[in-house]
Amino acid sequence: MPFKKKWKNDSGTKTYYAWRSMRSRCLNRGNASWDNYGGIGITVCDRWLNDFDAFVEDMGHASLGESLDRIDPTKGYSPENCRWATSAQQARNKRTSRLIHHCGVTLNVVDWAERLGISSDTLFKRLERMRVSRALSNGLFKDSWQHGTRTSYERKGCRCAECRAFNASRHRQARLSRKLKELSDAG
Image 1 (cartoon, rainbow, N blue to C red):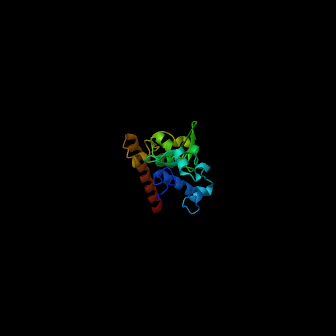
Image 2: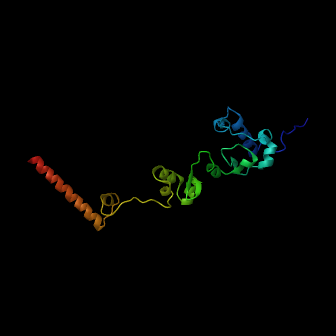
Image 3: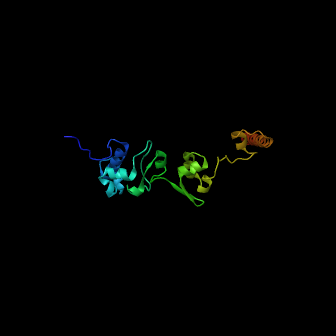
């Protein structure tokens, strides 16, 4: 007697494993990811729940480098809320993504960083220590220092006339303070 296929679409495909994994995350309490899916109320629509062929009819087959993604990460799996997406698209579309609203535009940190031409790590660090408007300033931040200061002479290595004069004055003052201290200690 010939073997009868359960589905008209092949079950050994990437698309099938995406469908099966989706169901397991939402329905199986023993799944390692259940707490982040079924455990918080993410569901699978009735049409896809037990019908792989319906899933393929609505979604088509996964292309190379793509996996199943929910457009709104707070809603369940359904034809209107799912797409095949690259890992980069999925990284931008998480419930935990930080959205930043600035000048009438709302983007996540990764998109803002890309728009500014800096790494997302750099932008995250900026956001930890400064206002959003300053953090989203384009370009690199330069240390705020001025000529004629200890920072400019010692840390920045500036040897302009103003910085050299300041440093010489600072050393003269330090020598004078040491001499005065020696005299007060001796007398």
